[in-house]
Length: 345
Ligand SMILES: NC(=O)c1ccc[n+]([C@@H]2O[C@H](COP(=O)([O-])OP(=O)(O)OC[C@H]3O[C@@H](n4cnc5c(N)ncnc54)[C@H](O)[C@@H]3O)[C@@H](O)[C@H]2O)c1
Image (tube, rainbow, N blue to C red; front, side):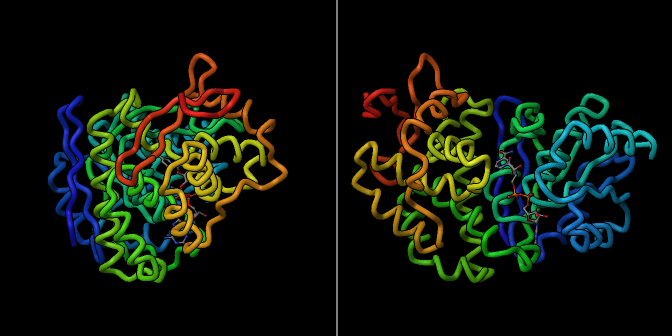
């Protein structure tokens, strides 16, 4: 078992991320460190009810608040339902929410924690690979407004994160690879040695070998934490996390989300590296193909479809397309592309 620390200088806070098999056993100790506590509420995705019940057994307490699986639950209606339940069940400023699930639950439960009585403490127990390596780290919480994703939200950091790799045993290989794409992304941008590690250990990660997963998660969490520490509020450095996302978001929108987020980012990473003539594009492409992610823009989405969507991307200003890309592995850069020629300028 390993512990990574996420420290957020802007709010003078630091919290642990406990990673490994059986990490859930650390939960009572973590909760004790938060005393005084007045009530524990476990917000969970019904697909992982058994993990939520395990959390309650380990703690010997906790009111269960179930949430239907799927992105549709990341809504204001669901926020209101959970807030109502907290109020009816007597949650106070000293209560703690424990969010058990993937990125949907940590975004939703984190947001509820950020607004209930102007903010209560929460702990994330992440149960998807994407949640572990990305969504639960960095303090971004929020919900969708109809079809617009993550448009309502807050920065609200958890008091701790638990990544128990035993909880990943039933995760589908598709969902594992959705998270793997984000790990490849951050390794390509920030750490060439870690990228080589992923190339060497791809099979072990795909078969969820516990020791390799733990090592992989620990480095991915450290890298994401280091980006967030330098730029909690998305001003500059955090944009490094957008590698693959400029084209990826355009593809998700053009396909009306028929192309999943991980698939879109996978295609986007390779396309953005090729646009900037990165010599490493083939290496990134080969690793993505090993995890059976798509790497080519489907022919039906021509540049005339994608370009307006790329220009519409919320991180672009002045009709410029801003991308984050590693022209050299491990050394990501922020570049502007000319909106007509799509060449870096
Ligand atoms: N806050 C952030 O910084 C951030 C970053 C990336 C993504 N996100 C958000 O995260 C969400 C996507 O996260 P996700 O991919 O984890 O989605 P998710 O939470 O919807 O989980 C994906 C699916 O896996 C199921 N599941 C969860 N844990 C499981 C387990 N252990 N075994 C079997 N099935 C399990 C869920 O029920 C669901 O069907 C999106 O809403 C996205 O906007 C947030």
